[in-house]
Image (cartoon, rainbow, N blue to C red; front, side):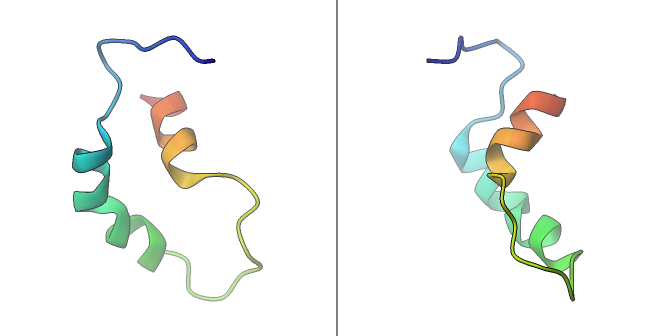
Length: 43
């Protein structure tokens, strides 16, 4: 299990920008990693 950090983005906030992240990628193979998990790791 992953430790929660104060800088973590909530699922609700992620849903507000998810469409922007998904639309940035037009033609590519399917994702193998969870986009929400990657964004949390970056922040």
